[in-house]
Length: 175
Ligand SMILES: C[S@@+](CC[C@H](N)C(=O)[O-])C[C@H]1O[C@@H](n2cnc3c(N)ncnc32)[C@H](O)[C@@H]1O
Image 1 (tube, protein in one colour):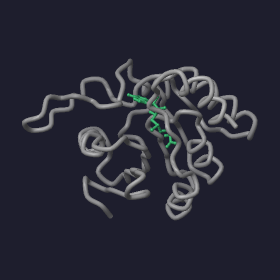
Image 2 (cartoon, rainbow, N blue to C red; image 1 turned 180 degrees about the vertical axis):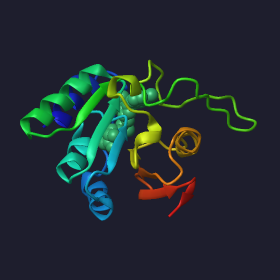
Image 3 (cartoon, rainbow, N blue to C red; image 1 turned 90 degrees about the vertical axis):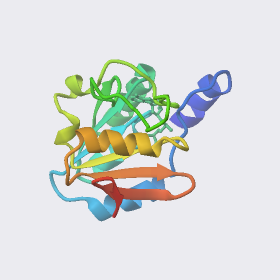
Image 4 (cartoon, rainbow, N blue to C red; image 1 turned 30 degrees about the horizontal axis):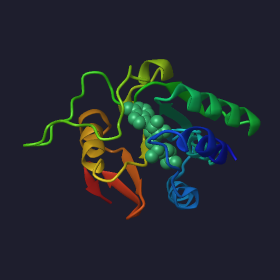
C-alpha cells in the first residue's frame, strides 16, 4: 500500500532511486541467518519494510534512509506492526569515505550524499553483524568497498539485485 502510494505520488512525476526489492527472497535469506541479538542494518531503508521484517524475525534492527519523508513512513509502519525497528534520516555512507575505482572518476551512481545517519543511531557501521542493500546495477563494487573499509571483518553483507537475487558476502567475497 505504501509502495503504491509512493509510486503514484512521487515516482509518476519524478525520478527517485527507490524501487522495492523482492521481499520474499530477502526474507528467506534473513530467516537463514537469524540468531538472537544479531545486529541488522539496512542501507537505504526507504519505507522500512525490510528493516521491520528483520526486527520481527528477531534481529536488533536499524535502517538508514536519505529521504526523510520515507523515514517517516518507515516509523509509522513500525508503530503499526509494534516493531522496535529504528530508523535514522541521513546517509549510510560514513563520514570520510570516498569512492575511488582505479581509473574511475568517483561517481556515486544513485547513492546520494548527505550527513551520515550513524550518529543518530548511536552506532557505527562496524557495530553491525548483517548489512543489507538493494544497489542499482554497477553499484555493488562501491558497497563492497564501503563494507571492507568500515564494516566488521566477520559481518555479512547481503546485496539484493534483480539479476542475482540476494547474494551474501563476507570480507569482500561471496559466501
Ligand atoms: C533501490 S531503493 C531500495 C529500497 C529498499 N532497501 C529495498 O530493498 O526495497 C534505494 C534507497 O536508498 C536510498 N538512498 C540513496 N542513497 C542513500 C544514501 N547515501 N544513504 C541512505 N539512503 C540512500 C534511496 O532514497 C532509496 O530509498
